[in-house]
Image (cartoon, rainbow, N blue to C red; front, side, top):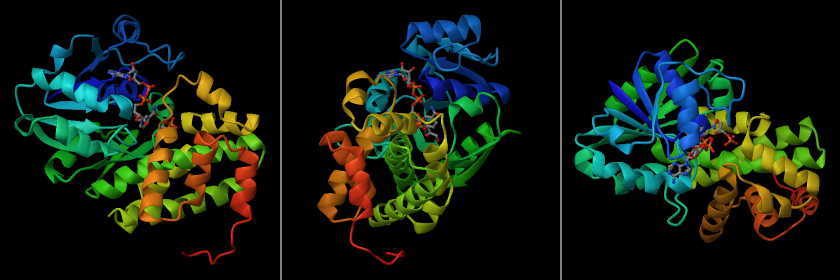
Amino acid sequence: MKAVVIGSGSWGSGLAQVLADNHVDVTIWGKDEHEIADIRDHHRNEKYFPEVELNHDIKATNDIAVVKDADIIILSVPTIAIEDVCRLITPQLTKKTIIVNTSKGFHPETNERMSCVIRENIPAQYLSSVVSLIGPSHAEEVVLRMLTTICAVSLNEADAKTVQHLFSNQYLRVYRGNDEVGSEIGVAIKNAIAVASGILSGIGYGDNTKAALITRGLAEMIRYGTAMGGRLETFMGLTGMGDLIVTCTSVHSRNFQAGYQIGKENSAKDFWEHNTKTVEGVRTAKVIHDIAKEKQIDMPIVDEVYKVLYENKEPLESARDLMSRELKPEIN
Ligand SMILES: NC(=O)C1=CN([C@@H]2O[C@H](COP(=O)(O)OP(=O)(O)OC[C@H]3O[C@@H](n4cnc5c(N)ncnc54)[C@H](O)[C@@H]3O)[C@@H](O)[C@H]2O)C=CC1
Ligand SMILES: O=C(CO)COP(=O)(O)O
């Protein structure tokens, strides 16, 4: 089995190491020459994990021809780059391949889910199926081989099983699922809620606030996700509640960190001017806000994140407005 990981950032490096630990022949392809040279020559990815020595069996290259005879290709780039990398690899493909999606969010213009974007851009003769490998998994902990569980979600059960077995080991346990809609929506929305979690912590609120945010954030995820066709039980699992918890509570989360800065400064201005990191929740908040408005789905937390990010609303005012909404029964 030959695997190629597209993307030499934090998650691409983390997943490549899992495969190398499992004795799979794995090569990382990246466009960033410095990241690739660092992995290839020094077995490190200093930009993301300054203290970590990666598995020496991970190969790395800038040459996209590496995907030619791959049995499985793992896409680990931000959602804005998924269509580009599909177009880049397609002319190289010579046989049917499993494409693994690991990105969390929507297409930057069409707002489509990642599996749909991949199916539209990789011709059927080269695509066995799309499997999304998603769940609560910060790369910073996976590279240190800390116990982690994720889910291989696909409409093709045989390919989901292949991915499940390929990645599972003593520190990474991979479950299987087939609710593509629910899972992909769950892992996208949790990023927008994690921005809210960071904002509230940045303002200075505590654990009660975080518990409230996670619980009511889950209610919004379920309301939106089931309206879009996801199954209720999916949102109780790793790609729903699981990913929501880890992203809303972890210092590793870039979505949480972005929100924290915004809450501390009581403004999103500096974030917009200076951010260079991958913060998927920022665009996701806009997508969910726009679609929920059109479909009249009540999403008060996501709406306030949207207002802070795109309408210059002060986070303190957003928190006040959330608390002074009409009083309701808990289950709705
Ligand atoms: N970092 C993590 O712990 C996890 C990240 N994810 C998801 O994985 C996706 C990728 O995120 P990260 O690896 O964390 O981002 P990152 O910011 O650490 O790395 C992104 C990588 O993609 C490359 N890239 C960007 N645009 C590109 C393009 N047009 N063509 C080729 N390469 C391009 C960059 O050079 C960089 O190497 C995101 O959707 C994220 O939500 C999912 C689970 C865990
Ligand atoms: O998706 C993740 C963990 O499951 C990574 O979260 P961040 O993108 O917020 O760092």
